[in-house]
Length: 235
Image 1 (cartoon, one colour):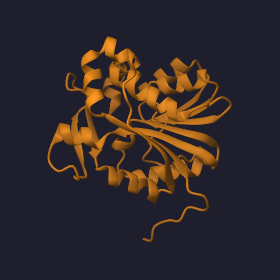
Image 2 (cartoon, helix red, strand yellow):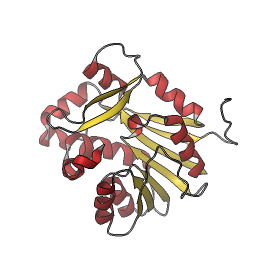
Image 3 (cartoon, rainbow, N blue to C red):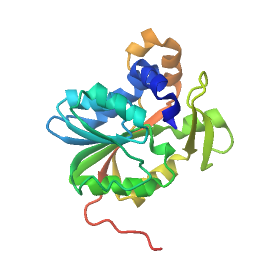
């Protein structure tokens, strides 16, 4: 989806209110100390999280489905990360079992149709003591923007930004459904975070800051694998 507007999105995300001053601080905060850790950056986009993780001492691998975004991410990371073009609807066959201490998956879960299958792949590549940190659209934001029943579960086609022609397809789901998929994939919620905007946003983007102080746009989680082998649902 992002390929057609990859360069525009990369420039936007680098310094925007919702990306730079809201989601990235929240996700990186949940990631914690990554020095010396093997981190897999799933849906790495233009490499904004990957570069920050590298600068904090992590060893980074990752992927994105957009070739242009992967090229931008490789350039941003200056060859220090192993970043590949890969569609997350397909298994991560090139990533060994238990090879990641941390998986970071920022603002992309809602694009995936079979989320449980992907989350199970993340669990497979995580070390037993590892964690998955992810962020996604907050169900409340979806309901406020789209209306209807809060409990609706359906894919929605719209623009990523109301000011731009950036068409996307994403799922709206209630919080109960989101958390149920974590459990089905073999994860426990260690921490749930409804981010607050960083103080700098009040000076640079006062209208966005005021909105995000009233209700959250995103929600973030730190998930840990359930101990023991992962059981598969009956067919």
